[in-house]
Length: 538
Image (cartoon, rainbow, N blue to C red; front, side, top):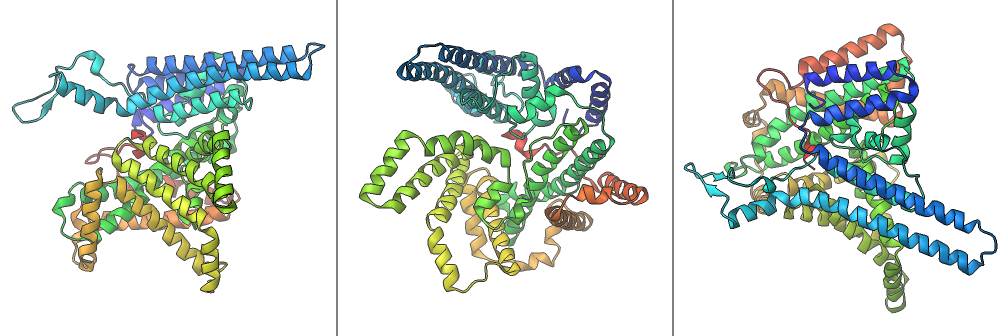
């Protein structure tokens, strides 16, 4: 069951109905039941993995909390000297840190196993003789024993990061440990976010889930509107563009032109945005119907004027997670301080400041690449973004001087447009690293692009040979135009509040137009298969 399946709408309606029927204090239990049912719709095999992992984190957080409670009680005793108080704090911190590090490592190891397990088992299958070639020349893995089956729980990349962050927050005393395991499990499995995020913080989402919310007509309307906008982005734009993109990159060595790859890469960038942000809008809309505010994961990233700004607007919760739990602890660690001190003494203050940025930034981006996938292309993707970030920070003074030297009016709207186009090109090039699947294929595509510029494909009908006829190509362009117009309005204020200020006739006219646009122009129904959300694979 996904957000795109027919049964999901029945599931959502029943969930909302029961949620608002139950007493306020018991409404979290409806969310637990619905989330478990949603998770089981993908199979029961992975649920025990999630339950065991959740129980480990829950118990670890309770243990850390108990350690700190005992510390606070000890510190209240009369007659303790400052030295004894300091020793008490250090002892408690050390014990809490052991629990935090051990359980976090175990949870992350489970994630690493699910990311690399298939490759490991493929190697073992060949080595142990379980995998053989059948008569058709295909690899037959049916002889593998049960222990070689790699179970990949739904949403593991997202809930793992959420749980590791939760443990860190409890350890740093930024959040309190949840006392009720079932409430904790509800936060972990919460169905709107389990497919592909956002990477929710317990402190923000957990309290909202637990407290229950009354029915509010305006919130329900806003939630339906947001979800509908997500379906528009996914079904009208993303799934339509994916036909073209998959057709081009699925037959790389059958193409002789170059411009077709450029167009497919541009479409691939827009398709990924509409697919991922569309899912986030659906999830956010479902939550808003229930009275819950889900953390924002996108903020019109294609309006960004720099790579750094882009990643403050794209997959916001992932960037925030890496900043809070990897970058900052690395940047202020004693070892990093010693390295910076050495550079300040032997090279200079600027080098000292830069090294404190360069090392944590590159580590974060390599880890970000590996979070997306374990192939060399994802490692290269992470290094690519890491280098861009580092260069933009290290050479910021020189870039500013060059801008003044060239007398560029940085306040001009035209310069802002140039910066947005530049950022889009940077992102699109990064997509070329990952879309083809292998670095060698990416290299071959880049060589092909440089060989010839076949502009005639724009006029001779060649574009219609990749799964989209003239009508669907026009609908894709129209959908992108609507997306751009709405995004421009959203940059200036809330479109939903603008709609709400109109009279009832205008409001419902807009609702009907939006609804039937998805129904009539969406890629779904007979002859089409639902395209899975791209970020579910991560």
